[in-house]
Structure formats: C-alpha cells, structure tokens
Amino acid sequence: MADRFYTASAQSRGWGASPVVPGTEDDIAETLGGLAARFGFRGYLLITVPSETSTDFSSNVLLTSWPDDMLKTYDHAGLIFGSPVIERLRQSTNPFVYDAERTNRRRADGKATIAADLFERHGLSRGAYFPAHNSAGQRGALAFGGMREALNPREMAELNAVANRAFTEILEHRAGRRQHVSLSRREIECLSWASAGKTSVEMSEILGLSEYTVNHYLNRATRKLDAVNRVQAVAKAIRAGLLN
Image 1 (cartoon, helix red, strand yellow):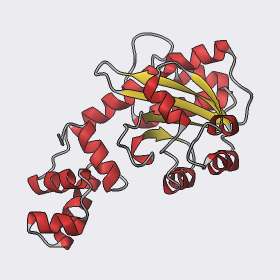
Image 2 (cartoon, rainbow, N blue to C red; image 1 turned 180 degrees about the horizontal axis):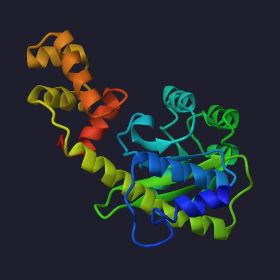
Image 3 (tube, rainbow, N blue to C red; image 1 turned 180 degrees about the vertical axis):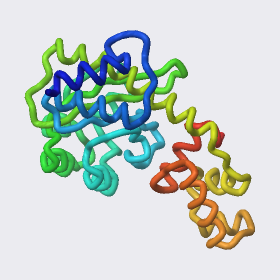
Image 4 (cartoon, rainbow, N blue to C red; image 1 turned 30 degrees about the vertical axis):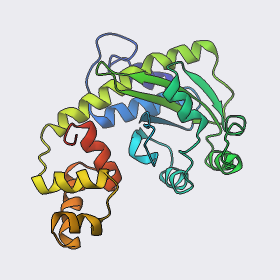
C-alpha cells in the first residue's frame, strides 16, 4: 500500500520525474508522509538550515510529522546549540545517517544524554538527513527518523533525489502565498526591533507606544504571517523579504 501511495503521489507530483508539479502544502506533506511510511520511518522533517545566530530550532521547521512536544522540549533544553547534526548541515551538502546515541556523543555541552533520550522517547533514534538548496541559494534539509536500521546506498540515493524538490516546492509555495501578505509600517517596525532582541517593554519605549499596542502589532503580524510566535514571525518575515 505504501508503494502504491508513493507511485500515485510522488510521481504525479513530478518527484522522481520531470518537470516538478506544484502542489499545496498538504500535497507535499502527504507525499513526504508516504515516503516515510514506505521506507519504514516514523516521520519526516523539512527545515531551513539554522543560521549561526539561530536561538531555536522550531522557527526553522517548514513541514514535519515529528511530535510538537518533542520540538518544544528540544528548544526548551537549548539543544540547537552544539548540535553535531546542525553543525554538519552548515558545513556539508552530503547526505548522512544519524544515530541519536552515537551522534550526540560528539556534543561538548554535556547534553548528550538529554538529546539521545529525547529522540529515543519519541521513536526517532535513527534516520538520515538530506541537505537541499534552491536556485536562490537558500539551504535546507529533509530528514527521516524512526527506529529502523541504517538506509542502504540505493535508499539513500532515492531519498536524496527528493530533498531539493521538496525544499524548493515548499519555499515557492510560501513565497507565492506571502506575496499577498501586507504588513503595516508599525508591524514591520515592531518585528524589526523583535529581530534585534528587544522586548515589548523596550520596544514601547523606543517607539513611544504602550506595551499593549506593541503586542497588538506583533500579534497581528504573527497572524498575517501564519506564524506560531514572534520568533517564527521574524524568521518568516526575513525569508519573505519584508525585513532587512
């Protein structure tokens, strides 16, 4: 059944064939979910590669079937700092497998056990990452995680061929959607100061507004950008070219 899904969904979208067929985010999510099931994984993760200044992982997630509480715990524990996987994604464009226990032994922050236990608890101890990029030079990665043994070379090659297409399609889809997003001058100002690390109180003093009004502008901008919090709103606004 998983193989039939892959044939019907992935091939009809142009993944594994040419040209790429645009689709909705739900279509992309369905295809990636089908691939995860076909290869015996618990779920998938599609991200932009976090920059050196990123302070959380969640704002870099484009699509995922990994548990929300896992990502929240990951960020709460500050595991983005010193992550061997993220560091490798920043430095290399080659696909690689991961084993949560072995990979996190390379952490120098004393959080190896916390990280390994988190992935073990959610059934995502083993998997693979496939770096991706688009024509604009934006970098991302597609990952699959579960408990199965390491992928063989043929499987690695097959999934690697999907990464760029998934990454490119989701960015193009969101870019098209954001062309219709219009932020007010005040919303852009507040997001800009938020990107500089200012709190609502500090922004209210800088802009001569009440804290309530600042939060109103931030919340409105967050809704317009379809973000879950102001950190993700800032990240989306930057990627959409709404902030310098």
